[in-house]
Image (cartoon, rainbow, N blue to C red; front, side, top):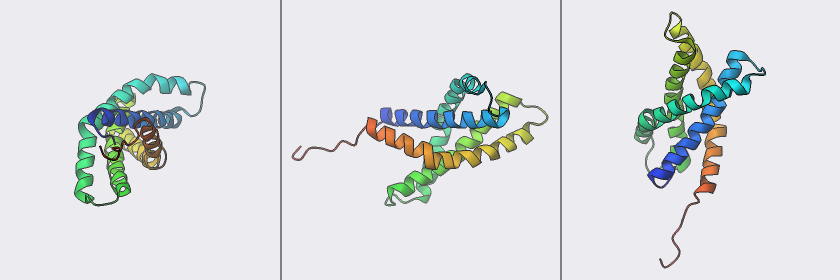
Length: 157
């Protein structure tokens, strides 16, 4: 979303922030359960995870996801089909990379790396896809559309 690079960066940042916050809570709750350190544990990991997510989104996943989506969806397709296709590809790519980040950050590259990675990957995918399609995506698009309303040219201009 966004009509220029600045707006696209703002939209991407809002979407990443929303997904990282929700997924951080999800992963901390899975790892430690609900406890009195939940907010602290989420806050400690939030900025590094957000930085990695933004980098992955902008440099790697966003380009690949949009490229794949526009090979599948025709330009004349309804906007919702384009949005949903891009969102699904974005979730797949981001879950793969962010689960790798989480596994390395919390377990390192040891003997059980692949067991931890594939376990985290599956759990994150189960949460991230519905979160993106039903909560974060609509919420971010709603907020973004309020911040940057579609400008139409006045008649005669």
